[in-house]
Image (cartoon, rainbow, N blue to C red):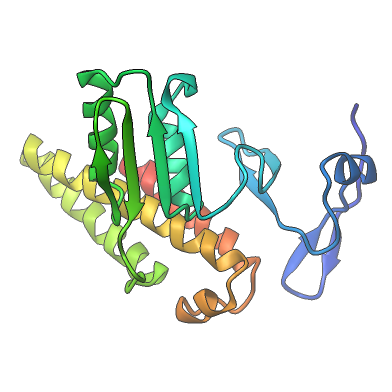
Length: 213
Protein backbone atom coordinates (compact mmCIF):
# COMPACT_ATOMS: atom_id res chain seq x y z
CA UNK A 1 0.00 0.00 0.00
CA UNK A 2 1.38 3.40 -1.00
CA UNK A 3 0.44 6.59 0.81
CA UNK A 4 1.42 10.17 0.00
CA UNK A 5 2.71 12.76 2.46
CA UNK A 6 3.59 16.44 2.09
CA UNK A 7 7.05 17.61 3.12
CA UNK A 8 6.90 20.27 5.84
CA UNK A 9 9.58 22.69 7.03
CA UNK A 10 10.40 22.36 10.74
CA UNK A 11 12.05 25.47 12.15
CA UNK A 12 14.99 26.44 9.96
CA UNK A 13 16.99 23.21 10.29
CA UNK A 14 15.17 20.32 8.71
CA UNK A 15 12.15 18.98 6.84
CA UNK A 16 9.60 16.52 8.19
CA UNK A 17 7.17 13.93 6.84
CA UNK A 18 4.51 12.36 9.07
CA UNK A 19 4.49 8.58 9.55
CA UNK A 20 1.41 6.49 8.72
CA UNK A 21 -0.58 5.91 11.91
CA UNK A 22 -1.17 2.22 11.14
CA UNK A 23 2.59 1.58 10.73
CA UNK A 24 3.33 3.31 14.06
CA UNK A 25 0.65 1.29 15.90
CA UNK A 26 1.54 -2.04 14.22
CA UNK A 27 5.17 -1.61 15.31
CA UNK A 28 4.28 -0.73 18.91
CA UNK A 29 5.81 2.73 18.60
CA UNK A 30 4.79 5.87 20.44
CA UNK A 31 5.62 9.56 20.70
CA UNK A 32 9.36 10.29 21.22
CA UNK A 33 10.44 6.76 20.20
CA UNK A 34 13.45 6.63 17.87
CA UNK A 35 13.37 5.39 14.28
CA UNK A 36 16.38 5.08 11.99
CA UNK A 37 16.47 6.54 8.48
CA UNK A 38 18.85 5.01 5.95
CA UNK A 39 19.67 6.55 2.57
CA UNK A 40 19.90 3.64 0.12
CA UNK A 41 22.32 3.40 -2.79
CA UNK A 42 19.57 4.51 -5.22
CA UNK A 43 18.98 7.62 -3.04
CA UNK A 44 15.70 6.47 -1.49
CA UNK A 45 14.88 6.53 2.23
CA UNK A 46 14.38 3.41 4.33
CA UNK A 47 12.75 3.88 7.76
CA UNK A 48 13.47 1.26 10.43
CA UNK A 49 12.34 0.86 14.01
CA UNK A 50 15.27 0.57 16.42
CA UNK A 51 14.54 -3.04 17.41
CA UNK A 52 14.12 -4.35 13.88
CA UNK A 53 16.68 -7.13 14.19
CA UNK A 54 17.17 -7.82 17.89
CA UNK A 55 16.13 -6.23 21.14
CA UNK A 56 18.77 -3.71 22.21
CA UNK A 57 20.23 -4.66 25.57
CA UNK A 58 23.52 -5.02 27.45
CA UNK A 59 24.02 -8.73 26.71
CA UNK A 60 22.69 -11.20 24.15
CA UNK A 61 22.97 -14.95 23.67
CA UNK A 62 22.42 -16.65 20.32
CA UNK A 63 22.87 -20.00 18.63
CA UNK A 64 25.50 -19.39 15.98
CA UNK A 65 24.08 -22.23 13.85
CA UNK A 66 20.93 -20.14 13.31
CA UNK A 67 22.81 -17.04 12.11
CA UNK A 68 23.11 -16.79 8.34
CA UNK A 69 25.76 -14.05 8.24
CA UNK A 70 27.91 -14.08 11.38
CA UNK A 71 29.93 -11.05 10.23
CA UNK A 72 26.89 -8.79 9.87
CA UNK A 73 25.45 -10.07 13.14
CA UNK A 74 28.55 -9.31 15.22
CA UNK A 75 28.98 -5.89 13.59
CA UNK A 76 25.30 -5.13 14.32
CA UNK A 77 25.80 -6.03 18.00
CA UNK A 78 28.92 -3.86 18.15
CA UNK A 79 27.25 -0.83 16.55
CA UNK A 80 24.23 -1.19 18.86
CA UNK A 81 26.51 -0.99 21.93
CA UNK A 82 25.89 -4.54 23.12
CA UNK A 83 28.61 -5.10 25.69
CA UNK A 84 28.48 -8.88 26.09
CA UNK A 85 27.78 -11.40 23.35
CA UNK A 86 27.54 -15.17 23.79
CA UNK A 87 27.64 -17.32 20.65
CA UNK A 88 26.78 -21.00 21.00
CA UNK A 89 27.08 -23.90 18.58
CA UNK A 90 26.80 -27.68 18.59
CA UNK A 91 30.46 -27.57 17.63
CA UNK A 92 32.46 -24.64 16.26
CA UNK A 93 34.65 -25.63 13.33
CA UNK A 94 38.02 -24.04 12.65
CA UNK A 95 36.72 -21.96 9.73
CA UNK A 96 33.89 -20.47 11.80
CA UNK A 97 36.25 -19.64 14.69
CA UNK A 98 38.74 -18.03 12.29
CA UNK A 99 35.94 -16.00 10.71
CA UNK A 100 34.75 -14.72 14.10
CA UNK A 101 38.28 -13.83 15.21
CA UNK A 102 38.90 -11.94 11.97
CA UNK A 103 35.74 -9.88 12.50
CA UNK A 104 36.69 -9.14 16.12
CA UNK A 105 40.15 -7.97 15.04
CA UNK A 106 38.76 -4.79 13.44
CA UNK A 107 36.09 -3.96 16.04
CA UNK A 108 37.95 -1.85 18.61
CA UNK A 109 37.05 -2.86 22.15
CA UNK A 110 35.54 -6.27 21.36
CA UNK A 111 37.61 -9.15 22.77
CA UNK A 112 37.01 -12.89 23.13
CA UNK A 113 37.03 -13.63 26.88
CA UNK A 114 35.97 -17.29 26.82
CA UNK A 115 36.23 -19.90 24.10
CA UNK A 116 35.77 -23.63 23.58
CA UNK A 117 34.29 -25.83 20.84
CA UNK A 118 30.69 -25.00 21.88
CA UNK A 119 30.76 -21.41 23.10
CA UNK A 120 32.49 -18.13 22.30
CA UNK A 121 31.99 -15.16 24.65
CA UNK A 122 32.78 -11.66 23.43
CA UNK A 123 32.89 -8.57 25.65
CA UNK A 124 33.46 -4.87 25.06
CA UNK A 125 36.44 -4.12 27.33
CA UNK A 126 36.82 -0.36 26.85
CA UNK A 127 35.46 1.53 29.86
CA UNK A 128 34.80 4.56 27.71
CA UNK A 129 35.59 5.82 24.22
CA UNK A 130 38.15 8.61 24.38
CA UNK A 131 37.91 9.67 20.75
CA UNK A 132 35.21 11.89 19.24
CA UNK A 133 33.38 11.26 15.99
CA UNK A 134 34.82 14.45 14.49
CA UNK A 135 38.35 13.19 15.17
CA UNK A 136 37.47 9.87 13.59
CA UNK A 137 36.18 11.64 10.46
CA UNK A 138 39.40 13.66 10.24
CA UNK A 139 41.46 10.51 10.69
CA UNK A 140 39.54 8.63 7.98
CA UNK A 141 39.94 11.57 5.57
CA UNK A 142 43.70 11.53 6.19
CA UNK A 143 43.87 7.74 5.74
CA UNK A 144 42.17 8.14 2.36
CA UNK A 145 45.01 10.45 1.22
CA UNK A 146 47.50 7.78 2.36
CA UNK A 147 45.48 5.18 0.46
CA UNK A 148 45.94 7.12 -2.78
CA UNK A 149 49.69 7.25 -2.13
CA UNK A 150 49.80 3.50 -1.49
CA UNK A 151 47.89 2.87 -4.71
CA UNK A 152 50.34 5.02 -6.69
CA UNK A 153 53.20 2.97 -5.24
CA UNK A 154 51.30 -0.30 -5.73
CA UNK A 155 51.97 -1.14 -2.06
CA UNK A 156 49.40 -3.92 -1.51
CA UNK A 157 50.30 -4.50 2.13
CA UNK A 158 49.87 -0.82 2.96
CA UNK A 159 46.57 -0.68 1.04
CA UNK A 160 45.18 -3.63 3.02
CA UNK A 161 46.36 -2.15 6.32
CA UNK A 162 44.78 1.25 5.59
CA UNK A 163 41.51 -0.35 4.47
CA UNK A 164 41.35 -2.37 7.71
CA UNK A 165 42.01 0.78 9.76
CA UNK A 166 39.25 2.66 7.95
CA UNK A 167 36.84 -0.24 8.56
CA UNK A 168 37.68 -0.21 12.28
CA UNK A 169 37.13 3.53 12.55
CA UNK A 170 33.90 3.31 10.55
CA UNK A 171 32.35 0.73 12.90
CA UNK A 172 33.65 2.56 15.98
CA UNK A 173 32.11 5.84 14.79
CA UNK A 174 28.75 4.13 14.23
CA UNK A 175 28.89 2.65 17.72
CA UNK A 176 29.57 6.11 19.19
CA UNK A 177 26.90 7.81 17.10
CA UNK A 178 24.16 5.32 17.94
CA UNK A 179 24.99 5.78 21.62
CA UNK A 180 24.45 9.52 21.07
CA UNK A 181 20.84 9.02 19.97
CA UNK A 182 19.53 8.49 23.51
CA UNK A 183 22.54 9.62 25.55
CA UNK A 184 22.79 13.37 26.19
CA UNK A 185 26.26 13.10 27.77
CA UNK A 186 27.57 11.27 24.72
CA UNK A 187 26.20 14.03 22.49
CA UNK A 188 27.91 16.69 24.62
CA UNK A 189 31.24 14.82 24.47
CA UNK A 190 30.94 14.66 20.68
CA UNK A 191 29.79 18.29 20.39
CA UNK A 192 26.49 17.22 18.83
CA UNK A 193 23.87 19.86 19.67
CA UNK A 194 20.81 18.23 18.12
CA UNK A 195 19.80 14.57 18.04
CA UNK A 196 19.02 14.70 14.31
CA UNK A 197 22.66 15.69 13.65
CA UNK A 198 23.63 12.12 14.62
CA UNK A 199 22.19 10.89 11.32
CA UNK A 200 24.04 13.64 9.45
CA UNK A 201 27.36 12.34 10.83
CA UNK A 202 26.32 8.74 10.12
CA UNK A 203 25.86 9.67 6.48
CA UNK A 204 29.23 11.45 6.30
CA UNK A 205 31.18 8.52 7.74
CA UNK A 206 29.30 6.04 5.54
CA UNK A 207 30.17 8.00 2.39
CA UNK A 208 33.83 8.25 3.40
CA UNK A 209 34.00 4.50 4.03
CA UNK A 210 32.37 3.75 0.67
CA UNK A 211 34.74 6.15 -1.07
CA UNK A 212 37.69 4.32 0.49
CA UNK A 213 36.32 1.00 -0.75
